[in-house]
Image (cartoon, rainbow, N blue to C red; front, side):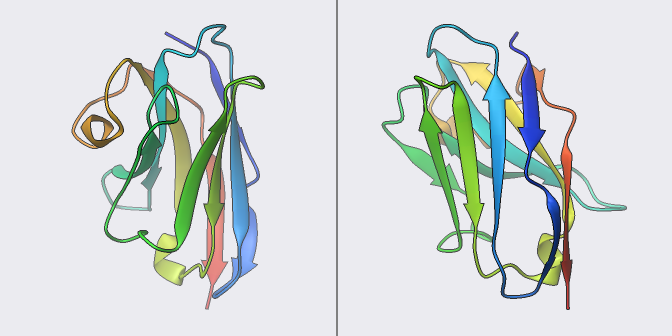
Length: 124
């Protein structure tokens, strides 16, 4: 497992942007990393993932075209750039990691490493 720490959440108006960052403790870039979110009263859902080598990304349909995931393996960070935010994007966002899987597989996998989450609130 790897330790993950999220940052960058906050309050933003609809149509605005936020950038989330996830710092990790892994020394070798073997972890595919992604973001999940959980809104009040709802189940946790997949948002986006990026393969361990940065070679591919995968997004939930609800965020495709608005969110962009990227990583800097030299700095052990993953960033989720969120644009054109909507009130329905309001949730606690969690960084997650799983070794040596594809980005698409993370949408169907229960990762073995999780951060504690950061709140994103989008006002209408």
